[in-house]
Length: 354
Ligand SMILES: *Cc1c(COP(=O)(O)O)cnc(C)c1O
Image (cartoon, rainbow, N blue to C red; front, side, top):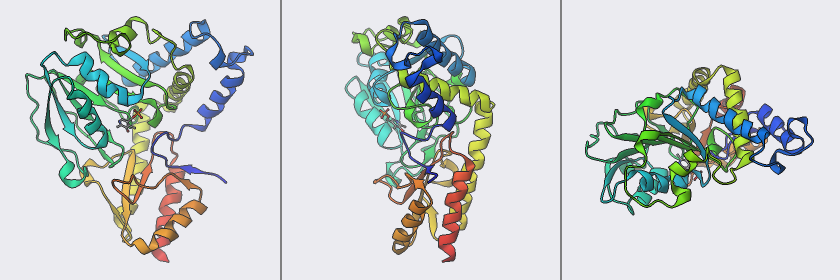
């Protein structure tokens, strides 16, 4: 049966990418060797790494004074690496608290210095993005989460920040245009919009590093990985390869601006139905609604089993909401075709008619 994969992460990837990736596992570049059994120092893999970085630079217009890294440890390790590399001894940083992921980032930073939470949406179970907060001038950096995967909220306008703006873009990187110049550091675990789990993309402005006088363990020091060209130790070759294929796919689609237009259209289709259909209610504040993770509740719990069965029979996968929000979450990342969203919308209409 054809599946419609609405999983929040790891998530849907383009079929063409999966096909090419599976081929490379057996026979990479028609050289009768597997991608995952050749040296990461060999030319074929060095080419993959360079291609991946070049594509990131091209697709997001990353200026030359920023480094592009493929690391390991997930976005969760960045929660720690960011303060380790950017917070001065007895320094301080400001954070937005917009959900589970930002809370985890805050928790890590607290071990390094003073952390002030200057915007917080926990009063309404994180169903909105705090606004009108003031970013202090005397901080080492300001951290925010661009898309809150669990609650379906997304920052639409990034603040201008006099110090370094640091952003966790795990679940919306490459889904819309961004102005990298505004940011000191961007990080994103690959498995939400770029590739399989196992690598984390980091885009960092070189000049912001090396200012803390902290002793940073080798592997946790961004400079190590810049100097080593993301090859200080063995990189996660397969996740980087698949990410490279996905980036190539994005480029072939016409780039991030084409993808963004598509994402807007896709999200609109589902949000319109949620708003129209008397059986469903969206959970996020309208103006902060995410283009990537669409969260909604079924108003009448007694219809839940029926709707779940309809979804299952239609091949819909992964729309159960996160336990902290309940209801449903349709993740409609870049590779999700609009046809799959139409299938879901039709089921919602059918449920209402019955
Ligand atoms: C999934 C997610 C994370 C955690 O990523 P890992 O790679 O599993 O550590 C962090 N931030 C956001 C916004 C996420 O969606």
